[in-house]
Length: 267
Length: 363
Image (tube, rainbow over all chains, first blue to last red; front, side):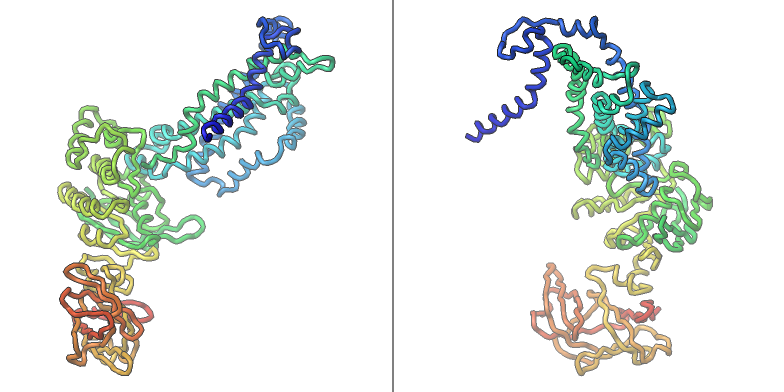
């Protein structure tokens, strides 16, 4: 009886999570006529919608933009956050205030920052540019990444560094040889969170880009026109857009357990 | 190996927290020196300053007469074994032990030789290929010792290396640490809060409290001539008993119990000016002589409250007026609970301290 209940719950949850994804993939393979006949379970699949993305309304640029912006912003975030978090955790830089200010940028709604940023970016000519979005994502992800990494660094006992320094390593060599191997799972988790967030981000991409730097998430919304909703091509593009995040999630699962429980370095 | 001199060293942390106050001491080449004190007494700060992990706020630190205040830990060539072992989890035991040698850029073959040699000395040969997490606490500590020893450092610093072990392993490792010290003739500074460890290991002991050195000396000096109440009370288990007393003559004190007065002779003379003053009498539990009945004036009656047998001896808690005293007596002495026994303090065992300054009054 308990087992039955357990499996019943599992099925409900799985259906809840998977159904939308299945629906998107199924829809992307349907012809225009079949899309509005959900009762028809057996249909002849077509790649028409995917061809549409290539020929009728090219979307390749949006994918390219999203990739560039996602990876560039994440690389920058890690370049800033790793040393920042390290310094917060070891030297208590800024006496705690600086860390709080860094984290607090995530506490207000993004809309609050949108307007000042918009005017700033307009004056600096950064609207609808890759660098503009990269900077924005750097701003928003940096606080989150610093906070996460700060926690990971804190879990590494300081004695390890002291020991290595006494053993004859400089602080930099100590970081490379002792701290980095231990922070790697945490850094991987943080990186992937940043990648996923940047890839999925819609609000700022929608406000700050028009054509040149438009990303996938904004591109998806374009199918929602004033005359009709192009379900087929939209589903096709969605199918492609979620692939990287699915891959990231799959890659992350082996790290996330270690990354979130790796306080056991003391032994 | 080096000689270490600390001259008037201060450590004041950001925010004005005073951790170490004007500490001066020296450690001879090859000496085993223990810094003993309760937690928060500044002993670890002192050690970390010697290691170079903390800046010295004021004062001078010399290795072999050379000022090392500004040198980094690696330049000081010291070895440090931590309370928490601080092993590198992703590396094997072999790699952990070899770590300091690799920093020095030693040849692979030479490293291999040295690692094997030190592993042999510390019984680690069987576990060289394992990861630290698969080792017991005692083994991990031995690895951390091996890593510290392999470099032939100027000074060997040990920060409570045994505090995470159970009693049996602790006694075992204690003997081993002393043996290694004797074999290598290593200048060793050992920080501990455990007086038993300090007493059993060290040539000399520095007792610290509230950031200051209370007394420096050999075990005998500390034991027989404690300079103040803190040192007297910190060394010894069970701790020294303290009683209020009155100085009658320069060579005589008295205890008032109820209406009766018991007088005790002193081993030396107190300054005339203290005559008539109150003072604190200190006496070690092992040194109190228990008499079954009142034989002379120089004994105080007390009531037996608790008896803790320890095999050949027992700890008896008695009440002398309102003051609880611990007495260590032999098994066969009759100390039934509720019985009145008479305590006799021999002149050579009596310590006397000033009530205000808590300093010793007898040399």
